[in-house]
Length: 61
Image: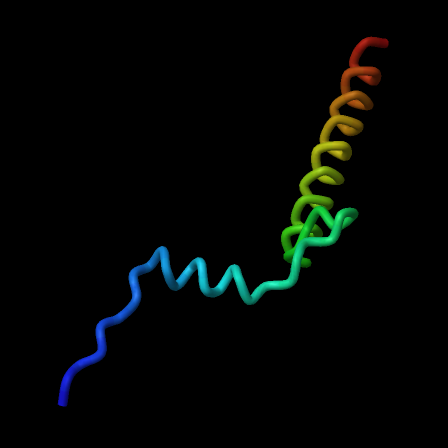
């Protein structure tokens, strides 16, 4: 029995990308958890800045 040669990594990636549907214009995040992680990090940063602002305002009196 002759062993089949496996496709190269680049060929396998190209085959997989060819099977995917085209990306929609208004869709920025294809991966749902990535979107929620991004939103969560933004909310966390805003909250940290607000808490810091409140602390600075309280200590300046």
